[in-house]
Image 1 (cartoon, helix red, strand yellow):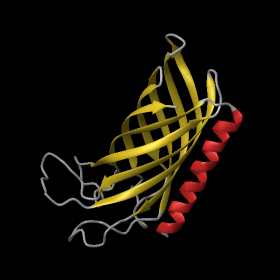
Image 2: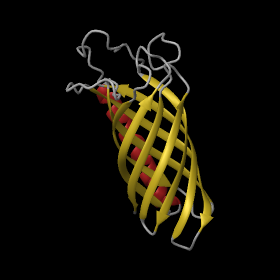
Image 3: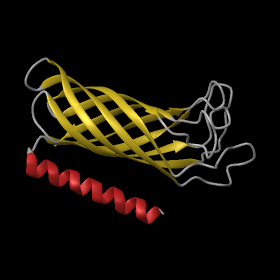
Image 4: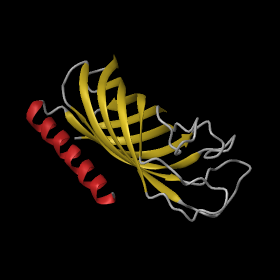
Length: 194
């Protein structure tokens, strides 16, 4: 399963890179940042807590102008144990998310030729991996292998530097047969467009 995930993500990234080179030379945004994930089911995320972590990614912008096609890949490492003000623990069990994203990006406000506010609307296909079974009693670990979501974001481009805040709304349950376990993500990224 892990080998298939790595192979699939590598192929999609190579297709995206080739498309950027062949179609428009619009740019490849390389970035990293912090992630926070939550859901409504207290079995996975107790009330008042969240799952924190980090992410890295690459998004290919496939057209110049006000609107462009966007294809991307993200890798997240998220805490399996939720964090809150009331729960302090030294245990750090993490699991991974690989997200394949496709959709549209668009300029919202042009401040100048090199500084602009942009938005995006993406479909995200998410694979989960690395879920440990020994996280301790009371920690839910029976996750589905994949989910999907809609990712909405705003960003600021200053020459080649990018800052992006995004929110992803989960569509499918993360927990196996566990209602209300659609994962929502809030991310903040800083990157560089080549």
